[in-house]
Image (cartoon, rainbow, N blue to C red; front, side, top):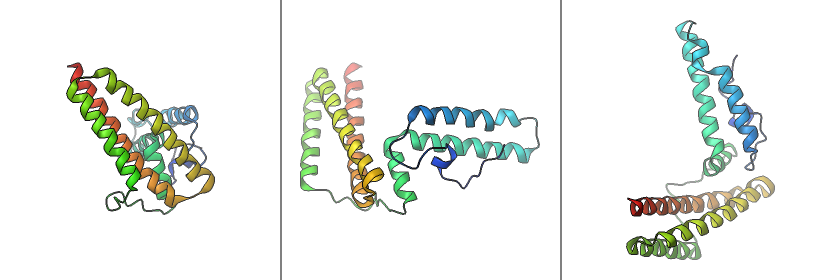
Length: 177
């Protein structure tokens, strides 16, 4: 078994290069590839073959992790399209989005400080719905419109949303202790 370590993850898993991914097909392809490249299958071979199988397994696992997570998959698609998302340097966001983020964060902080688990759970649920809507828009930008500039902006927005989701999760955990 040999894997071309230079092919993109979509090709590696036999999937179309798009944001909308058939997760069951991804999972099935990952299991199939893992069965072919797992280092245990090559344990009896020479060191060079062992190292090569480790490289294959690492590439397969990296690809699976990247394609499984919507935010990472979007970033990867933009990278393949030659678009620099400038995540570290481009922090420009619309005033409306920034205001929305402030309102979310204030609501989370108030619920956390008041120990309102139910309110945090409701915020969590609402944010999940909002994130799904944003991801649907991202799918359109990437797969249908090929508007990579808008998609890069949406990726930056999703990063804020994911971070807020994580903060809600942490607040819930802290209140459960």
